[in-house]
Length: 528
View 1: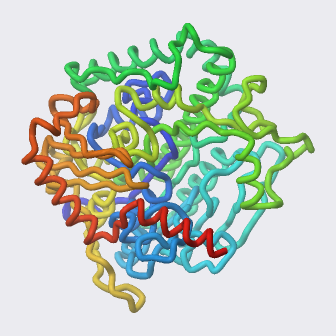
View 2: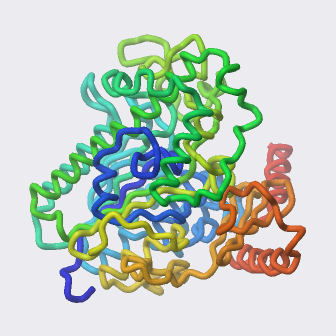
View 3: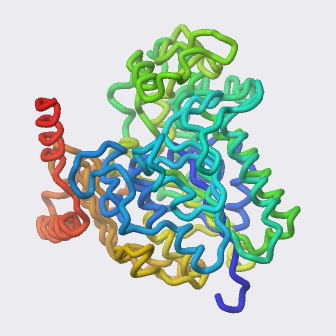
């Protein structure tokens, strides 16, 4: 590492995309730019997020587990350690640490690690290490009129009749790269909201997928699985999970034109993001920063099975009363998944729902929220011409979000601090993945997860997992990563060992049993 000039680092995170959506992971979405990064770099097959937007972001940015950063659930403040919904002062972000190593730091996109969207601003990007910021402070947002749009510390409005948030994120990322013009290395965090609902996309992008999903979800899941096997991403002995029982066979589905349109728009959202990533890559080449820039791409959680209804309108307008009740030209926005309304335009606000999330997470079980593989498995692409010789290779070493910061600090030769701004900093939970670049073992031995009572621990090939409020299930990840046949009854000693490891981790990392969180909220409602 020391023989190479310290690299620029670009971290690209997208939102609510399943494990198999990208072309280079078996999907049919056209992602030539991400595919090119994979072809000339590394694809990881067993990298994990934490199953939900803001906990994943908190873990990714701080190198800790989300509860340690006080984002154990969402942005709600439950008034107890681990569940404050706001990064605590005993954490440091990647940007804050890299700045101590003389890195310039830039961000474009979704922040979503503080509950204070109007102020105070102590946990806004520029107060947490970023020199330049453009994006939204909240989570989901209308792509034509995003809520809480911010430049540095000032709230701004979208500009122009052709405004589209995915494009604006790209525009700002390209600007930051082109304005850098310095020998100083930079860290850039590009956090796309695509393809998180609402289903908004450019008509020309939607048109590219017209008819592509007419074969239906059953055939598409089988086709994806076969391509993934041929790529070496999954084992051909792992059976495909059954279709979600709430979803009928494609031949029996109602409103099939509307159903296919949902997936067409979702694919178009990813396609537009990939087009933007292509522009970022061109900016690096045009500024002669291509070879020594590490680019890392991943998703914050698995595909999202949330079906939107009329409640979504109240949710959106309660958060920001001056929000998007109407389009820019005065038409009413029709909130919720309405089969009589084709999604994609500014007047709609829909999601692709259970059946297509089931496709996105092929071949795995469950979705965003849960910690079975469908909720936590993410594509991870790493590309660095000056630092990684391997091209178009797979890496199967298991790793998870805190390892990203550890890897960045390792290659940048910057130490993780014990104090920052007068506060003691919690020890990092990450392990550098740099050894895996040359296909050496990863130093992480055990992986842990918890979200909304869904919990899991993995050690070696064994994964112990629980879907709240159920019981522990045990799976051999080498024999059957699709988690179909629970073998907990066959290996009680493994269940005991892993469950004890989980309890020790949960106590150390401020994880509170979900029943207690729900009871706490119930009491608060009763007292208000």
